[in-house]
Image: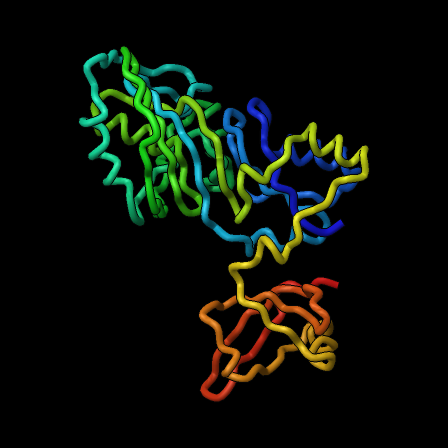
Length: 296
C-alpha cells in the first residue's frame, strides 16, 4: 500500500492514537501522520501509508483552521483542557473592539508556543517539563499567518470569537487565542478547533476511522495518490537510461530549459510512475538532479 489518507480526527484522542488505529485497521506497520493535532482538536490529519511516509516532509505546508476563542478566561494549556488560571467577565466587549486586533497577527510574526506543546527544549518535550512544574523560557519562533476571517461573534459574560485562520506550518492556534486575550487585558483560551485543510488535503474529502474500517471491510477503500498531494512540486520525467541511474542513486544532468522555480521536483519514469523526489542544483550551463527520495 502506497499513498495517503485524509483522516477526520475525532476529539479526545491523540494523533499518535489515530496512527495506531489506522495500523490496526490496515494491518500494516508502516503508517505515519503529517502534523500533530491536539487531543481536543478535530479535523484533517494527513496519514501516510507504506513508503509514502518518506514523502511527508515534501507535502504542502499550508494549513487552515476554524477556531473558537473564549475571551475572559486564561488556562494553563491555552485551551479548555487546562486548569483555569484567571477569569474576568466581559459582557460589554464587542466585535468592533476585537476585530482590529486580528490584523496584528497577519504576516510573518514572532510567536511563543504554548508551554504544553510537543516542542523540545534541551532534549525534553515542553509538556513533560510543564507537568513537572518546571518554569522554562519557551523560545520565540517566527510563524506565517496569511489570513484571518471572522465567522461569528457570541456575546456574553465570556464572549467567544469564531474565526477561520489560514497559515503555515508550526503555527499554534492556542497561542493566538492566548495573545489576543492578553491584548485585551482579559485573557483568552481556545474553546474549540477544527483543522479544515492540511498538506493539500481538505476536510470535505476526509474520512473518519469508522468509515475507513467500513470501506476496508467492503473492499471499496482506496488511498490518495502521492501525485495528487505533491501537485505543488514541478514534475520531471526521466528517460529509461536516466531512470536506471536514478535507481542507483546517481546525480543526473538536466538541460537548463527544464529549470523550475522550485528546488525540489517530482521525478517520474517514462510511463508516468512516480519514482521519487529530487533536488535541483543550478550551474552556469546545466542543472543537476540529485536523488533525495528514491521509491522502488
